[in-house]
Length: 410
Figure 1: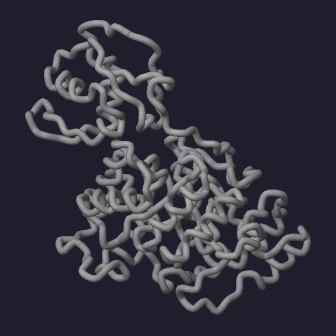
Figure 2: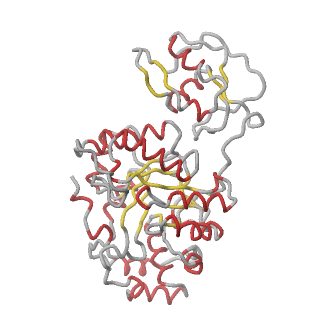
């Protein structure tokens, strides 16, 4: 419950209304005449006067116990609701550019690359994105720029891909507003732990050249020595499985509360990892990105995520070479038959199948013609019989991560 106001604020001019959505990082915070019975709250409000939201979220203040603590987005929201602070109106302080993404209820309802599904915090994430796995800094800029020019609006990268700088360069070269591009990146397994995760996120922001991330996810549920990051990067020497939730995820929640990331999630989490996390988290993950294709139809995982409001984002939809895959997904009879029936390609059938199952997808290609092909998944619908035939290809086979099941990670 909010504390009672001691003195009514004197409003001067038009101010931004308080909303539940992401706070505009460039808006200026202004101190009002409202005071609090708690002196420490007045002091923390005083120090925000004249700063931007972003600058406020980098402050520290002394709490009622006299301990220094970070000024989080939740603290700023509290002070705004208590009318001790207000945000200057749009004409006085520029807001983050609005997103042009259009919300749909289900991945199968997407009609374009700009369509997305709302995560459980309201942030809209595009259904179809563009992956950058195995593209180096030197090689990534041109493909990402081509993808953006073709209409892709979600770019998936990672700390360990070591291509974040090139991705950021492509976004700037595209001329698109920041709010029109959804950036997803991941904290690598050697960066598990509270302090390491905070540091890794800030490094990713710097390399990408942006003020915030749209989605930040944990790449793998366990640690390992630094390879393939630069030599000398090692996992926390005091690692325990508990650190995954009490350290890494706590850092993710704090980054979210500070407004540095608009959504948080996980990657390669098994059902066991998800259930463990949800016992202790303050903010449940918004997505789980997992290997999902006709040979690995993770039905139980998909149903659990849908029941708990977690988006499932599929990778390796068209196959993976990590385990020297011997199978060609495009040649599966059920896939070829559906492609012929709808006059589309096997790749389009595989992506459409995942979308109709309820998954988001992030195909990757360096060839513009393949990018266009992978985006051609909105104008046809697989029949129930075609979906069932592809489902029956399930064999439980994993190809990514050299076939390792993430559930084996303690």
